[in-house]
Structures are given as C-alpha cells and as structure tokens.
Image (cartoon, rainbow, N blue to C red; front, side):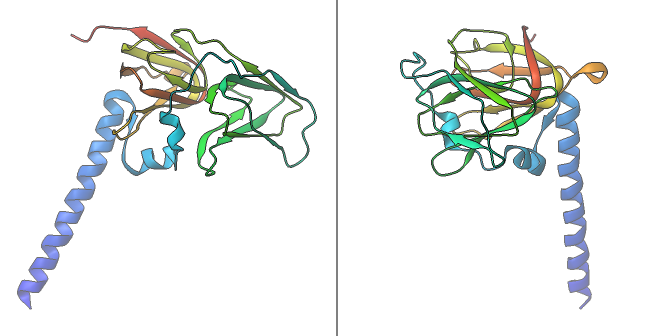
Length: 223
C-alpha cells in the first residue's frame, strides 16, 4: 500500500514538473521572439485549409474585377475565377474564405486596423462577405515587396527569401506555413508596445497576416 502511495506521489510530481516545463518553454519562446507555441498556437491557427500550401499561376488571365453594392442581411457568398485578388470594402465587415470542403483559408474583420486583404483564390474558394455597404474586388499583379498587409503571401513570389525583422501597425499575428512542418505563429503589436520579430523566410513558405494593417520587413544579417 505504501508503495502505491509513493508511486502516486511521484507521478503527481512528474506531471507538475512537466506542466511547469511546458509553461516555461512557452514564456521563453514568447520573450525571445514573440512566438506563440502549444495549445495557444493551435487555437489561433484553427483547422486551416490545405489550399494554403498551394501555389497558383499568378498571370491572372481568368481574374475579374467586381463591385458588390447590394449585400443582404445574411451576407453574400461568391466564387471568383482563379487569380490573386485584393478585397476591400466601404464600412466595417467580415471576409471569410473557405475551400470546397468548407475548411477556412482566411477570416478577417475589415475596419479598425485592417483595410483590405490580398489572397490567392483557386477558382473553387468561396468568399463570404458580410456587414459591408460595398465591396471592391480587384485583381492584383505580383511583385516583390517588403510592405505587406493582411492576407496570404508567398515567399519567392511576393517576398524575397531571407532574414528579416518584422514590425507592424495594429495587433495581430504572422503565421508561417511550410509543407511538412508545424505552422509557426508570431504576435505583432504596434504602437508604444511595438514588437520586432525575427523571421528566416524560405522559398515556397506562405505567410498569413491577420489583424494588422501593415507589416514592414527589414533585412538583417544574423552574426
């Protein structure tokens, strides 16, 4: 009986130590580079659509411009031809993009810090818009830039591979996706509590930005 009691105490102690270690790891990761790991990371990412890993043709040969000026109380869902688009609106609203299985690719609140999103659509994505007076959907050309906003960006097409310091305006997250790797999440805070996040970006990675009006990338060499 005494042996059972001692074994139980040891197991409890091990569980406590393990839990404390996990909390320490989370705090250390955040304090080092504002990276969020564990359950918090998983909650932020959610059940993401696998189409985020797809790389579509950017010639926009099928893409079309669209103005939606009558949106009913339940919102409106549209499917656009394959292409890269910028979606913005008049007044506040939400933009939710899902794949044909209903899994979410993007869900962003327009207004406040976010003034539009840029994203690749594969011709099967459903774009649900709600709350706007008007919505403007415009095909956009591909160009390498260091000034990014809410949306999904591809390293090698929109961003040059390399090491960067990222800062931004607003409060949101940078999420990095790569085939075969666990997604990574970094918190971005603007203003007086500004965060500066170190990123090592590799070709074909996808960067998803949510909640932030603008991200600025500054190249650096890590000694």
